[in-house]
Length: 92
Length: 426
Image (cartoon, rainbow over all chains, first blue to last red; front, top):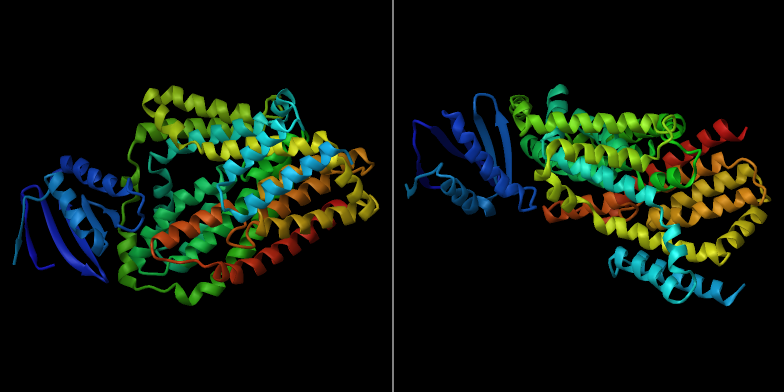
């Protein structure tokens, strides 16, 4: 997507790339306390009974790879905002 | 034949027809059929209650509670990712290990629960590797039905058999069905791996990505995991020892379930009870009452008498007939009502002079459980996985499944025929 994300760079890093038809987010947390918030994002999508909306992969050193289906992109961003992991989105 | 018997057959056949056509939920139909038996005076309420097998119901409920709480820990995701990493992220090998894990899970939990736990992690792994999930899902469905065959608690027909026949203990199932089930499992997985080998290719980069995953982070609650593992260990040990301890399998499962709830406290009580499949429990209750109408009016005895005349009371031909009829019937209709009808019939065959019932019980179990692999509607696990896959845009059609699974089911039953013949009939 042609957007720029604003977040607290001291706490996390967020990169967005295309992955086939989907969008992939690579999130690195510098503060382990934020894990709980990311878990809440995951739980939101696990509770909706759709199995392929997001795929959540945990890598070592607090790195998270999240593949988001295109039709759930907006919802995913809303959940990142809700957990205050994102602060702003701007058109590039 | 008495008027009561004719009415009982009518109610039974109408109920069965509705179950087969699946126009109305099977639980509603089974309960309606059972209630009709009582309302029409075929069987009194007291007698109907006596025919409800509370051992089967207790065993199912207890295991459902244990699994509901254990699933909260992330244990099953951990196992699947750990196994995928052990085979270096190779899709073909992952197909094999996920099949084996599903079979092992189905042997000690129930098929439907196992596939419900395996499907999400399968989608996740196949998406990471960018491979088609359908070969994995079909393998897991087939493996779950085979794994369920191997123990008393693995598949509803076995639970019903173990409950109805005192000699068919947990250890008896282990001694008679586990080895042959796992032999059949390896044959099936080998053939499936061969069929799908060309679809299961990915890049080294994607495999490396999977290898980098940290499965330990999937365990969300370590304290709950410890408690769940204690309860699971006590329960499985209890199953191995239940004959020695003179306790029924339902007592074992309910002990495990409420020990776990004691350890976890009220926090999980509501969640665990919400996850119990009450529709399945009431389906069983309806069926037990429905079949009791046939038992009490002497219809089952008549059928047994007819079957004994057909085979001349010969154990060999009766066993092989039961194996094949159960398998073909279970491929197209629900195996639970089929087994519920067959159990009293085989018991009556014993009273009519068939001396050795053991091969008949194992034939019924193998036929009814493995027959479910024949078609997409043959077992609950098949229907559930196909439904989940379709919802996610991966359609497993009746024809596609039939083409792969029906020949595999026939091969499995041929293997069982050889096994039953050489182990019990010569």
